[in-house]
Amino acid sequence: MERRKAYNRIYFCVIAFLLVALSVLGLLFGSVNISLSKLAEVILGRDTTSATYAILYSVRLPRVLASLLTGAGLGTAGVVLQSVLNNSLASSNTIGVNSGAGFFVMLSILLFPQNLAAKSLMAFIGAFATSAFILCLAYFAERSRVTIILAGVTISGFLVAAMNAMKIIDDDLVVNTLHFSIGSLSGVTMKNLLYPSIGIVTAITLALIFSKALNILTLGDGTAHSLGLNVNLYRIFFILISSALAGFVVSFSGLIGFVGLIIPHICRYFFRQDARLLLPASMLTGAVFVLAADLIGRVLFAPYEIPVGIILSLSGAPFFLYLLLRRGGKRVNA
Amino acid sequence: MLEFKNADINIGRNEILRDISVCFEKGRITSVIGPNGCGKTTLLQSLIGLSSVKKGSILLDGEDYFSYKPRERAKRLSFMSQFRENTPNITVAGLVEHGRFPHMGFARKMNADDRSAIERAIRLTGLYDERDIPACELSGGMQQRAYLAMQLAQECPYMVFDEPMNHLDFPAQREMYGLIKKLNRDGITIIIVLHDLNHALQISDNIVIMKNRAIEYTGTAKECLKTGIIEQVFNCRIHSFESGNEMQYLIG
Image (cartoon, rainbow over all chains, first blue to last red; front, side):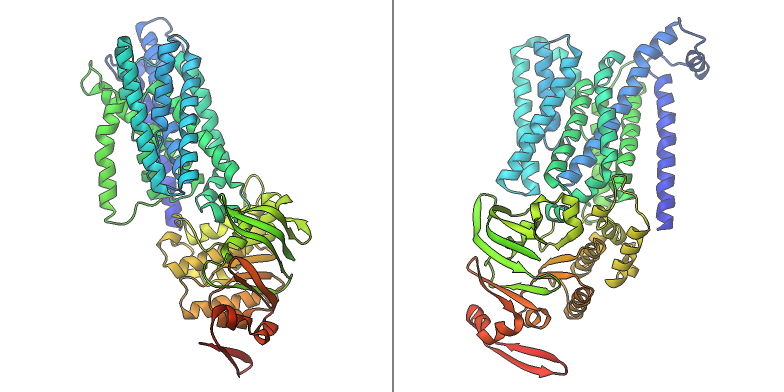
């Protein structure tokens, strides 16, 4: 037990170090490389006019922040959803929440092209509407875990088709939403990030505060109820939180997959199903994961860029398969 | 005293039980028995929201059971469910700690009371050596014990068990009975759904017999034997004899 605690501490230290290191690297490298001394000058306020300053503030910083928010948001949303639905296959992707948010964002781009607040709000509405729909479906049809995933896959397919239909109707949308469909952080600005960052930070804070209740929910309805948890209230509360996270992330990063599914599994390997550790661990690990993927996408074929969504799926899928197979038939813990 | 008054109980939209009135006396062990599908589990699951009371009421110590705040309710009555979703990947000690949930404040910090309740529960269930093992890796019987420990840590004056003997081997069943009797001697009211009639007759002060989704009989275990109602409901014969200080029953 003591040893385990020591391992946990080491994990947090390593991940925190990676977070800081990758954030700094993310500021330094890209199509133009910036030296550490230049970065220091800008941070210390000695340089406020050069091109370096402009690149840092209008390109690199928003990008690093967007990576952090995306990873932390999706990682946390994954833990919350998997716990609430008691299903290790759940993530905002697999149950169609991302597609729901994506559909509404695309609708918003079509209807109010200039309105950033509308985009965030629509993403949240889309994510929540899809979550609520899936939850109702699972609740009224049959309380089975497979049902939820199947319903999610179905709805996801439907919404992707609807998004494609919109692209056919409006040609401009194809070009405007190419990066959105793949999941990309290029072109993110501080202004883009304002509303989503407030939403994401609030939702993560709430999830952390109520992490004990999340633990109780994983025991199943009957047991959770007998322990004095208002099961229905908390379920809706946590669905709201995960919707907010998925929705706000999608609003600026597009349809990024895999983070919400994989990160909780990696962290559960170290921290078991204890949300008090699992939530912060997934938040940090998710952030590191997306930071690394975005950085690789920027420097690998510089000055050309590979969208972060592609890097995440290309590296995430084999890695997840490896995790599944390495555990040699042992079930993936829910 | 836990009292169901003219209760109609539904699962989802299906009405399962109609106009049920039954009383579980304080400080006693009451067994609920009856053939499969007679509604025993449905009746008691209304206490944890898995079935819903559509009409009538449930009173706990004279107060409306549903008027308690969830956590206040969970400090008075604990429930071991027959059906559970998958056991989460947490250590046995972690699972037992969940039993303290209703007692902990908003910050969910454990105090000395919480720790001693957890220690005691782990000791009583003989799980000391397993405390750091993930509950989901234990056998069915050991998991059952771990959940019992969680329920003990809840420290409620009323404890409900829905078929607690599932997955337990013979010695473990004996231990469970011993523990239930001990808890009862400490003043805890026990309500228990059982399949083994022999055990039910041995352990219970009172017996509730259900048949065809209705209460067929309520009374003390001794009277119950005299009336021959069990023989009638279960279509069997009961021979009782004394062995040592205990009554034994042979059911065939």
